[in-house]
Length: 306
Image (cartoon, rainbow, N blue to C red; front, side):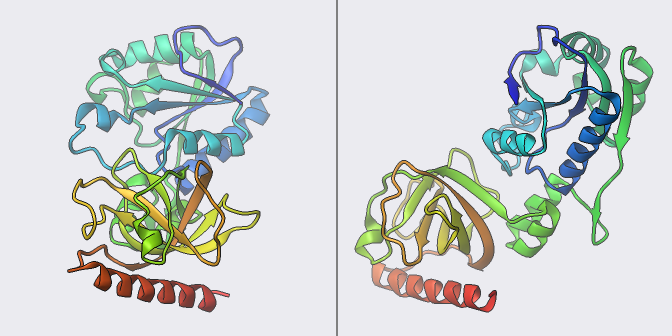
């Protein structure tokens, strides 16, 4: 799969294209990627994706933008798994934001990406001040046909990145899993921490987060990448109010029955069940007692899930 960060040079061959932010690559996005592959086969055109980085809301309102559900790397991995031929990553900046919808169609979709078939969501908006919509896209397109993806519902609820964020924020991992089609995950490289967990009897693998996470608290988790098989554990995701004051979010994972070094290794953490919210304890002894209780509860969760 090719990953291209330029939209200025004409594509070497026509493509079937889908467009979106694809944050979380939830079941609605998955349906779009599946439809893209069907059309690609029917039309004998390579499947391509146009996505944006940063998210437009991070550009326009950085202080109030919602947390990301997935990193750019995670999105690219998902596109690869769906057999996408080429991913175009458009840098969302002032130049792109100020493009009139008609210019976006001509300069980006027709000349830049050589699109012959375009799939978008039925609520797709684009161009300066979000003036472009599905009707304008269809009327202005000269070299490509346009298809709108129908809304995907799960138990009567429209699948969207917003719905996933809301489920994660209230700790409803069962609902988030249903909307995503898989457990929610975070990935990253294990870094050195302050070693406090080890002194308390709970050595942790630490992943520093560049952005505010979509959820927080203490969780029963499954860890991939630490061993040849997934491993159970318990994770703390938050700002560690008892032992830290810098307000930086950190993911700490205590892997059950595992004592090998993970420093520098990239791991993926699946969030399966929320145990409790993060809280401040009066001292380290109280924190340690609560950690023992968390581990016991997480082990009980895994035992009951067998």
